Length: 76
Image (cartoon, rainbow, N blue to C red; front, side):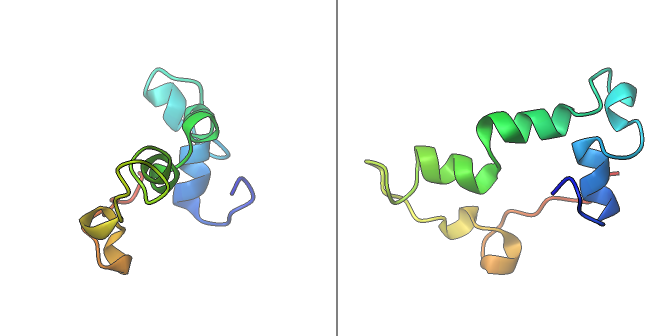
């Protein structure tokens, strides 16, 4: 995703702009967090998903475009 052409993704991963500095963080803070723990879907599956003892499906915890309620506003 570091080579994505999407400006929101570039900004969050610290490829462009100085968002991290404006927040008092390293500019690659978003990249470092996702690299360390994964994205929301990966975290859900690892801790709550169908392969765990809880065995939950995403249901309302799915992204809005997959029938769920999770919607992330633009990262500006």
